[in-house]
Image (tube, rainbow, N blue to C red):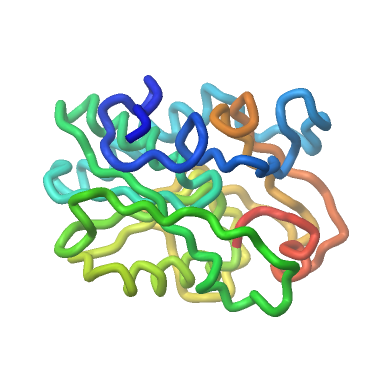
Length: 231
């Protein structure tokens, strides 16, 4: 098993392909890789803001669940995975014990497969403890229409039967198309349908930031076809 980097040294679970959690060889950032195109859009969160938001979410998870006894964190690729590992490390710092962390690919469960170009499959990596009877916290970077989370619930149902499922997101940008709500939110970010949210994380992009870019896309489906944020 590949050792987990320092920032997740106390969170347990398989590490996805690559040198850091959430990295996939050949993948590209929504807003550019180190040495690539400059970040576009107006900044709304910088590294310290993201750090504080994740710390708050970690404490909220512990408070709501009265500890980390039966918790399991599953990140939704791509950027939900490193966020899950960060949360696992923060929770472990408070509790003094490890928290199972893994990844849940939802690609084949999406309801827009026929509308989008071919998508590369990511890795689903469950911790050895599995998900049966546990409280599973799904972790994603951006909550938009809710369709990615619907797909995640379907994927999770094929892997086991958790006792309960909760949702943590770094950014909730609104415009829901399904009755899905996050339990833990780093930042509620009101946006228009012609804006795109870019999330950059150190593990994939070389730095932490959230920016908003003006586009011509007017619906979540149209935004997805132009490479916008997760739904």
